[in-house]
Image (cartoon, rainbow, N blue to C red; front, side, top):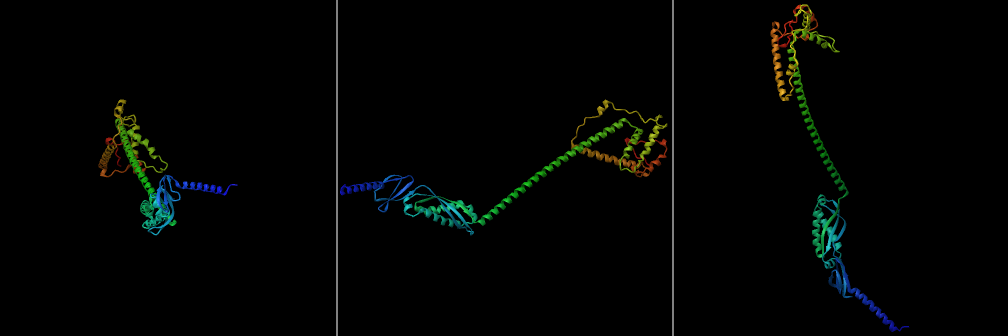
Length: 399
């Protein structure tokens, strides 16, 4: 059994080893990057340890705090704030700050995070209290700038630098949100109605312009077609008129053609009474004189003097190639021809009045009844159709 002295020696050696190990662990200090260690010696501030390996005096130097030098982000819970128009809004804030002086951050304030939070709340209420709801919702940058300025000045002596202040959310009351949504919906509906009305207006204007141009073009086409059609009819009438005059028809042929057209005059399902024209008696007298033994030629033939027919060369020479005229020029010429025709009609009327016995107005041949041809039938059949009028026109006989 070992002696008591030997046991006490081993105990003392073990204590020395333990003390040495504890002293060494306290004397060696490794500081990580972006961190600072505050060291106190005998209860007073001694120095600040930066990143790296450092040696301390065991049991004399003591680590007071370790400060993180990186930029930190702190989000504070929503805070009720009253605006200048007496509306309570809830505002969430986010603070970006960075310790610049580890000693001041350790000794100037007990908890700089709590101090920044309370300073943010009071400053926010002061800033929002001078703004109404609309300015609060639309002036985030202004509010952020004011908060950052006040916090930076207040936290400078704490060794804290406030880099940025952000308003994360601004929540007005539910009733105000409902009113704002209704106002925005009404504004959107108004804009949509205005845009729809402008679209309908432009559409109607374009449609009216298109219809106007279409009607103008259609009217111009109709006018040109009417002018060209009238030119064609006028040329056809002139060709027929020239052909009749060149064929030199006599009164017997015209009377025969007149009798052939009488059945067409009487055609019609609704005709119940047929008024016989007075020219029928003259036509019958001409036919009777031509078919009777006392005809002009003595043979009762309807043929008049031989017609000088048109040969192929004459017909080709007379029929010119049709060249379309300018519509405006054709219209002016048509008006001039119409005026000339009216003048000729007036002269013919005056001539007929002078030829009538007693200077009276000749009676209308188409308004006489069927009894008048019977009275005229008692006239001398040898009298013939009467004298022929000049210039290829026939005057109405005067009874």
